[in-house]
Picture 1: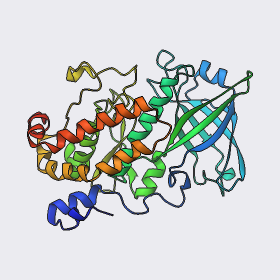
Picture 2: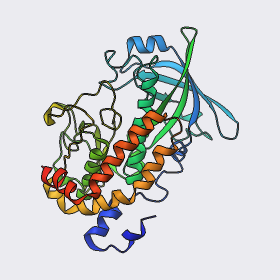
Picture 3: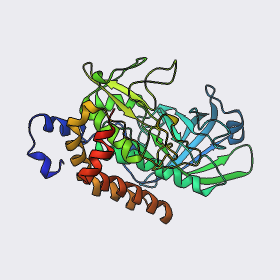
Picture 4: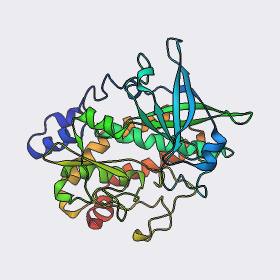
Length: 350
């Protein structure tokens, strides 16, 4: 439900909060995978040596996927796998690349994966370095935080994955999470994927865009564009635009270069001349300043819920929990101080 202090709002301010607040029952019953936030224990058996050596971007390798549901019923599915992504798919970045999971939909009925087809799996990047597993958890948190702020966000489900290498006598268990497919998010929200080489900010829902930019500022992320894609690629950069035929909303994803995640391989965006990805850079438009006070009030009203996400993620170790908590508390302290808002946001708008 909306916070009590927001229920009395009317006019443009009410429209702002109604447009960015989560809707009840946002996750469709056709997607049970993303209607639950418990950790799923699963197994993936596949030719992992070949998968990580060849790193196919188009061709799939054969494997199996298995898990036991909450009622104790075991499930085993045929699975096709390939590596995915760009930066993290490079061997120089990750020894264990992100994976695209491709299921046979006919096998998924009456399981937590009913309604799924292809899923992006965010993996641990380096098998031999436990610290990278914590980075997975920190990035998972960024998706959950955005879900707290708006239903116009990708679902994410945390899994404890036992990888079984069918080519060698090798198995290991690491955390990973899957992300809601872009076709499914469109169906859930009743929107169409907008294919475009680029957008104008005037084509985007201003309230939602302002909130997304504030979210990116919260997590310390500059590795995105809501209106432009990489050269010769379609819009956008680490965001996907959707439209209802009248107005568009760019929904962000991929937050490993954010300050909240603070991955060792993440480099500051040279455009902003910062020394660390943990240095926040406000990328809001001056034309959105009228939305800023209400956006900040809304985010402050969500602080307790956001901080509970950090506290409740039991797999996060003490050091990483303290770092994440401190980083988020810095943000909330800044947006609660009028002088800080003036100096760090209003005066820094584009």
